[in-house]
Length: 149
Ligand SMILES: Cc1cc2nc3c(=O)[nH]c(=O)nc-3n(C[C@H](O)[C@H](O)[C@H](O)COP(=O)(O)O)c2cc1C
Image (cartoon, rainbow, N blue to C red; front, side, top):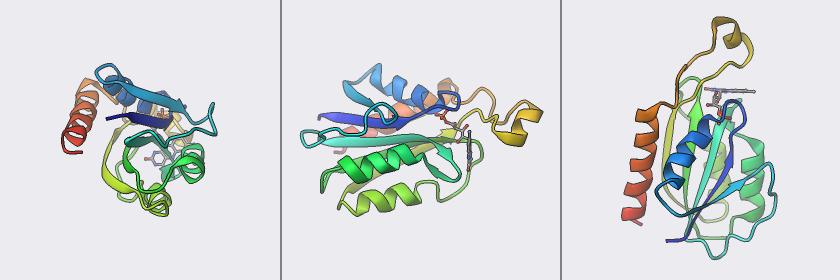
């Protein structure tokens, strides 16, 4: 199954830790959405969109990448890290891929160290995350997903 993961991970490289755990065990094409704005995804069977959560959604580089490059009717999944757990972080990216008639296979989110704004004053929140448990859970999420795709 040919897989690509398009990502944005800048605040502390938190989301990239999840991706690296997956890429260490599986052949995956990694696409940094800050470096690549156009990419032909037609030959890929499974496409992941991965991001830290910025102002309650996936970073706009990933969103714009999906709007521009996702072919119709692809299988997709989401990976993300956040400072504070809340519902709805995948809403906007979900809507964007559904516009392309994508099949959403699943989503995995976990805490990621956050020192944005006032959190810096208290030494940040979600310190130490993603930890080895989080990356192991991300890997099994992915393995479960490809086993059933
Ligand atoms: C500008 C900015 C906005 C953020 N907005 C949110 C938010 O709305 N909700 C949240 O839970 N975390 C928020 N965070 C925390 C990040 O989602 C979290 O630290 C994430 O793990 C960063 O991922 P990255 O290191 O892969 O970029 C924000 C961080 C930054 C820098």
